Image (cartoon, rainbow, N blue to C red; front, side):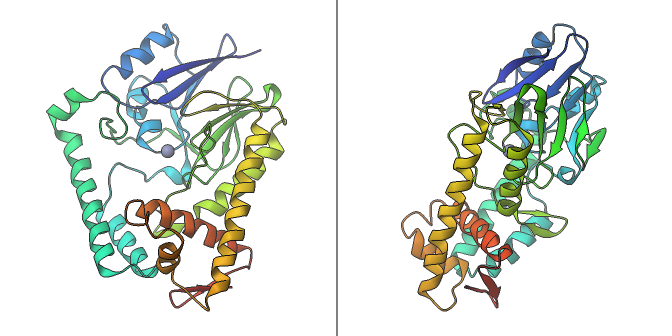
Length: 321
Ligand SMILES: [Zn+2]
């Protein structure tokens, strides 16, 4: 018998799973004023056997350094290793090449680059500014801090932990994304991979210098989880309220992806060959400017799925079926 405690930290959940002698912590928690004290209070003097960061984003791995300084090893998926806050020159170069690859017009490209550079300036400022550090109130993401750290353990294979828990590589939300399952008790600790009432849109992201095809990996991971867990499993997400019937939620996510694929095939049927940007303009004419990256990532994800299934192909900047 194991117990689960949910510790709410701003918009994030951190979970303590205990069997009375061992303690596993899932997600490090975000780093803002008061977060460390809140965790220390919840620990009541206990020391975890291990702290699992489901992925490298700042609100899930933000306190990684703090835990390790207290002698608790943090476990992270191997392919999330290089994630740090903000964007390096190399990330920006990759994004610029990507914008060309999808056929974005010059003005749109310039706007996107300016936004990325502003974000990078903000990220470097937040590491050093005292005013910023003093004001951190937990708002996401502007008031969170992320000190770089080297996780003491990384994995790329399913790995047994204490308390009957298994850390399972579950790529999708990020390349090295992990979920933690407790198959016997029908529990899934999903991080951002499965959230209540939200279908996550995997972002445009790069790993080892190449674009990471988030959506096909995400859908694969959901299918794997469905096979690993009992149908009535309970989900303990990284944000929001825990929920029941994981199987049904996964099925709804997979169905929605299939509907989107079908719609995209219809769009591709209308033209000989089309750039991703032209598709985006046609499908979301009013929202494209405002929600540029979200729309681009959604369409790119579906195109990746169709391409891997042999239902669409890409040549010289254009997509066709
Ligand atoms: Zn995340």
